Image (tube, rainbow, N blue to C red; front, side, top):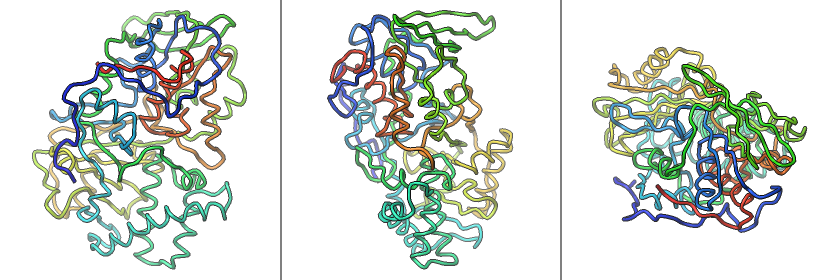
Length: 480
């Protein structure tokens, strides 16, 4: 692993041309984009606003929160920037998010946990000890082999099979039993459930086994130095964002749209915006909750797609200590095979290893994540510290500062990100991306067939909708 930032532009480029993976112009928009109303100042909305600004198109950017960034949120924990939402630039080679980081002059740290397998501390709560090097190697090898064989198993089981079913078939064929089976099953469970923020018995095996990223790179990818915040600010540039504007209704007419909002604060008030088009970039969880009223109602096929596509739970507890007492030349990130609850707190990401700061980020997702978030804020920290004490076999100090997420309770997110469960397919993502009546457009990671669940998927969806409105094969983005 590289010790320092792996790339940094000497001078950020002012503008650069981007496409969404191809030069085709998406159809479906009606009329010229005279005034575009954008709902949501996350990656999709900010990217779209950036492209429209560079094209000289009048637009209004509305955000319900009191900040920009959406599910990209960098906070300072005892002076250390930590991402509570998206953290990695996954598969960074060829990724437009990497290109934009370079354009903005943002360095990245290599954060490929998979390259640290030899020094990951893997603790088995059932055996009350760390796994040996041989046990770890064998378990990780099965994750790789399952990935190689999953497509074939999926073809045998059919489209209704889950990742859990596929994993059980694989483990049975390997003849694994006892501790060796438990270790392999834990890692397959971890890799699938944490990456898809969904219970593995509900994740579509067909989707998971056949997903192919358009980008490359080993392991998880890279951390932007300073977190995602400098990149969000660079994409926002001098865009005017109307914060605390909670959208209540979208009215579509043949000649344009009307968006009705509530401006929240000490003295809430109503506001109305009229435009030629509206682009809805709010998270899928908001659409599932029906927080925005559409008049006329959304088409039945789009409502069904909203209902079918999965939207899960992924929560973090970010902690900064006086020193990295858990880390030494033979130990870094921690895996916990819990004997309390399956995948309770399975992964502790070592910020000391990645960025040289004394921090840990504990993660939980899926069913364990839903259970974890029932605890109050202090109880979450106490549970994390108790599990750390088990892993390390010693008393653990309280962090000097810490933050816990609850994306599920956030009314402007209502969860983490999208995935494809059994009963859904990538075609549902295409349906989510379709314009309605030529005037109501949609963007966000849940509308990206190539990269659902990824920040770069949100970014390229904003590019896609800019291409659709401008009727161009590519758009221009500026940094800062």
